[in-house]
Each structure stands twice: as structure tokens, then as C-alpha cells.
Image (cartoon, rainbow, N blue to C red; front, side, top):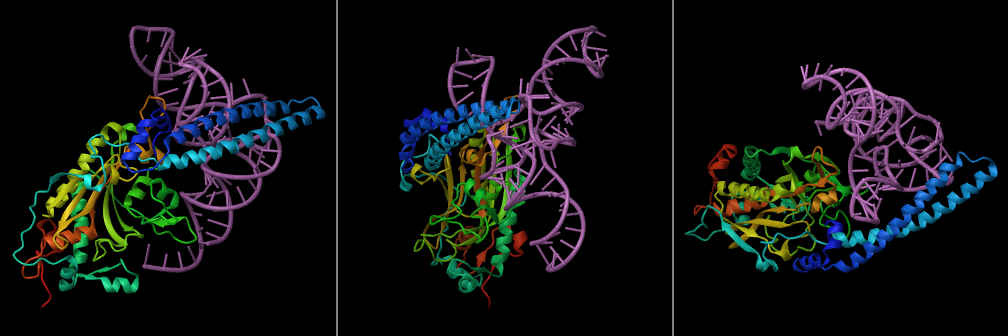
Length: 424
RNA sequence: GGAUGGGUGGCCGAGUGGUCUAAGGCGGCGGUCUUGAAAACCGCUGUGGGCGCAAGUCCACCGGGGGUUCGAAUCCCUCCCCAUCCGCCA
């Protein structure tokens, strides 16, 4: 959510930004409604003050008749106030709705346009693999090495669910542990988060917990939903808190399962475990001072690169274009790993600087000692490793002519072997 | 899941329907005094918002939401959280 004052004071700028980000919002209407709301608010406050004044005199009323007269006056004023308040609240709700639809401002260097306009910033340290055999996709590799049971997942739970088996289990745990070690080294506080969150927290992070548009599973007869990412709980951890400025930046990481309905995503890259309803992810999250957030975004991106360089997986870094940024991001870098099975790059991580957009909505503030008032922190999130997609890139890039898969050296301490060989 | 007791400001803590201001204390900030410090004394003290160039001033906020009332920290409903006990459970 953008600052309402900023919107009112810069309607043209905000409108232009909406256009670039392919968000259809009538900013001018918001400005007009806000003008009306202010008028109504002033009226409410005046009536409140008068009603309070009347109430204070009732205790001192000299006789019963005087007392009743004042009570009637108080009743009248309160009724008038309630009516004005109702109108105010109607306006407020309408403004909120518009305000929530306005995306964050955009970093000046972000390429303008749709997905095609996104810019490749650089490549990872590992060159694209050159196979002297026909490389297979992860589904075929997993079948040969008995690493994955897609049919079993479908039978027990449904399409989009799966069992990891054998070395894939070791790889999942190894990837978690390897990436966690990188983040611990970088000073993150590690957490394992709840996999469920209250709908209010889910909404605060910018996700729709329920309704036809939702990407989130919700629990019947409760206000809980399964999280789509630990970003929801890690951000929610500080919702409505005020943090002393000297504690910033706060760098957290969290391991959670991620559940996504992927409604409307059918037919697009549905083979294998690229797009699934459940996966495990190690997520980075930071709360920073405003002046720290740009450097923190680079830091997150650099860590993602370090993790994938360590896994010897080739990738490119994308500066996501305005039309593809989503609402909260001021700037977003994606790592796209090479996936030989598709013969294309596929998104494996994503890191965003949400500036104060998410913090305003979640009410996460900081206070500078000795200064009056508080300000909103900046929030950032980034994928350290999303296991299912990392597995795809790992298996497909490290496959060998004999059908085996070589384990990257950084994972060997936890996998306990240097190669996954086909069963005899 | 059941029972009981709780949730008040940065912290502790009083406050069962009405004196214009949530008592008092601690901490913090400023001042007086002092060569300096301590003590003592005096003053100030949170968040969000409206109006105003400003000084100011007004509104709201006592876990969240709703209700009763002219008026609610206080009474009622509901939810959340904390503590203790019981039941269940890995």
C-alpha cells in the first residue's frame, strides 16, 4: 500500500506508474474521495467534541429536568455523529479498495514493459552444460533412479502432489542444510515457521486468503490458511510492531512448506515437479531502514547467486520489467536456472525489495530514540532455495551419459555419496 | 477440548459508570543547585489522525472487534493472547 498523502500529492506520478505496471486504477477518483472523506472526518470530530462537552455537564446538572434536557441533546449529537461516521466509513472503504489496487513505486532502473522487456543482468559462474548424449528431463531421470512417485502423490492427495524417494529425500535435506549454512554465515537468524497463518496475516503480506482469485488453501471453519511462502509468516512476525531503529536491519530466514492452489495455471509447465501444490522452501526476509533496502536487495541476490554457483548450476539473473513486478515489489531480481529438460531457463528464486509498501499494510514501524513519531520499515524477501525447482535444475544439469547424476560437492557431506546411480 | 485467574502507558502498578486531563512509582529527557557528579527539588514524557505557516488545538486509542449508555479502562457479548490445573496426544 502506498502512502495516501503521497498519492494525493502526486496523482500524475502515481497514475503513470500504474500504467507502466499494467494496473488499472483511477487515481483521480481516489483523490476526490479522499477530499470528501477529510471533510466528513472534520464534521465527525466536531460533533464528537460537542457531544463530549455535553456529557461532561450532565453530572453537574442542578435538577432532573435540566439533566434530561442535556441527555436528549447528547443523544441528538451522538446520532448525528453516527450518521456522519457511517458516511465517512463508506468513503474510507472505497478509498482503501482503490489504494490497495495501486502497486508500489518502481525503481528508476527497472526496464519498462511487459515480461519480454525484462533485462538479463548477468550469468552465473557455471557455463551451460554440453551433453554428448540426449539429456533427459527430471521426470525421466527420477523414474530411472526411483527418486519420485508422482502417481503415488496423485493417488493419495491429487495431481500436483508427489512423494520424494530415496536420494531425493537426502537431496531435499541436503539442499536445506547447505543453503541454511550459507545464510547462517551471512548472519541470518534461522527459523522454522508455522505452515499455517491467520487470514489477516496472509492478507497483510499481500495475498488473498479466500475467494475465487485465491492462490491459497484455507482451512474450513477457521481463520487459518496454509502459507504459500514463509514470507507470510516471517513478515507477520513483526506485524503491528515498532522496532527500535538500532535493531535494524533484521535478517531472518525460515524453512516452511509452501502450498499453492495454482488455480488457472493448468496446461503451463505442468510436467513433473516444476509447478506443484506443495514444496519446501528456505526463505530470506529482512526488515531494514529505508536507506538500507537497496543494498539489502543486492545482498539477497548475491546470496542466491552464491548458493546456485555452489551447486554448479548455470543461471541468469533477471531484472524484472514493470509489467511483471506484482504489486508490492519496488524492484525484483529473479534467478532463472538452466533446465536442460526444457531446453530453457526456469525461475528458481526471486528476491524483491518491497520498500515500505508491505510494511505500511502490516504496520511494521521503526522508532529512532529521541525522535518523535515512527516510520515504516522496508521489507525484502528472497528465495534461498525452493527445493522442487532446485531439484529439477540439479538433476538435469548434473546428469551423466550412463544415466547417473553427480552430486555437487557442497551437498556430499549431507547426501553421503557423490553420485546417484541407477538401481542394478 | 474443559476449569480458573489475568491482559492498563517504555516498565511496574492503582483504577466497579461522571470532578477538563488514567493515581502513584520506576526509567528517560530538560532545568535549579554544584568546581564536577550524586542527592534533593521543579517541569516534561506514548501512538495514529484532523485543522493550522506556526505556536497550538481537537478527535481516537486501557489485548482485538461489537454492544448498552448522554457518558465505558470500568457493565454485556465475542474473539485473541498469557498463567495455572485437568483431559488428550507425538
